Length: 405
Image (cartoon, rainbow, N blue to C red; front, side, top):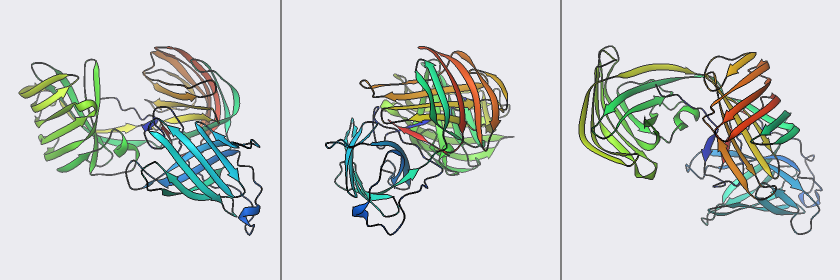
């Protein structure tokens, strides 16, 4: 079965390319000025972490919470700054602009007597959406990085941990005259007879328990594609006898795949898969059938990942650790027992950004761990571009988070 990466999700919401950082936080409460104060007379320093709650511009429903770190200065021209963010505070009025490769995002609001900021956010479509900003007071912890990314010891490390969960999966091999590969479907809902919408990558696995959605991948030697939409229709589901159905998948850049499957015992060689049409990794296929193929279906326990984040007005760094085994105090080999993914933006001396994934080797040593409280340890990981080492001692206080690039 294809290895599941529960990584820091990449989404284009507030920013694109490499512009800002958003984090979904557990706690959006924070102390503000006492109630009853006239907003226009407030004297408040906005420096610190803020969570903005706003409608999800990507899906059209639901909401997102984006974490910012703001610096409030006495600069008369631009006295509010953040990562790729500039603005102004005057009395109770707050305005700032987030620069993106798709255009500017304009935010305007008013400081309320309780210290929150309410107003609107405009993505440039002419229909501003309502938003609210609330102070976030993290406990924070220590984080230090060296090598590919250098971060001096800081007491502003944030951390979060996702819960373990069960994935239901269905996968099968396919053969054509030009390309061979595998198709895998995964969901947090139980697989049975029915029609399932294919959603973008891990959303159905990390964004709830939607038992009518699946995530899907097609992959082979040297290529790996995550479906962005499509459909799985299961007409027969009896893993001890027969599993049948149809599918169509759309991937980025115009790649696609559709066909039907008849999967019988034994699982090592009982699969028949017919590819009606497809284009994968530049190879076009159609009307080809493969028989005697391996297949599998069942459940898998996915261990919750933990991530450590640093955020200020110039830099955003996220290091995600994805256990492949149950963890506790001890040392774990990379990537067999612990996968690692790194993403960062540095705007302190011109724009620098990047991602490091698929580590070649390394170790993660956990010296103290409580899945409900926090984690302490060190790591040394070798990526294709070099080595990243680090030390951390952090509290779990953000539930789920995303970088918005």
